[in-house]
Length: 231
Picture 1 (cartoon, rainbow, N blue to C red):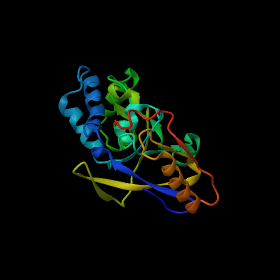
Picture 2 (picture 1 turned 90 degrees about the vertical axis):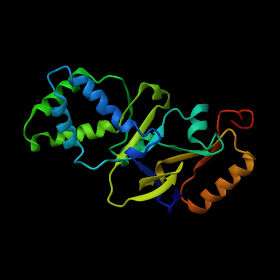
Picture 3 (picture 1 turned 90 degrees about the horizontal axis):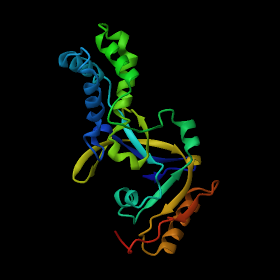
């Protein structure tokens, strides 16, 4: 990930089937099946509908969190609390990315939504259900187990024909590049377990001053005190 020029920075959006929890993409489908199976929908009809959904390409996901100063989040996603966090203005992100939405943490689906899906499954014409399928495809990207509620995750989901790969935790993962307007970036937060914090802050400031002559980015330390120097 890098500052590309004075106007934008590039972040990596990971293919939905290659997220940290590689089962989360099927989570919504399991919720949907549990909601429709006792209401006259056969497994065959359900699978036929899911096959139609799968015709549409899978999205790539760029994740954010509203729970930014939470030690377990730093530990899991911030290089064991020794990395940095990029802080964005959510309103500005929304003005540039209409697909930015909060994840839904649920173990059931709402009754009205289940009924709408049953109606879609029962229709015969593929053309008639295209918009319903797109909606379901989106929800597959947003629904997560309540066990992850503490993450308070928001996601941008996008598609692109230009796909790259990288190795993460020994797994080859597809990703796309997402250009974020630099105006959306408000701060760089230095992790609670970074060594030589003042030196790290100075290095980051030098980089930002070199790349961004027209915008001031705040560089600050995490509100969490160093936790036993490491985690």
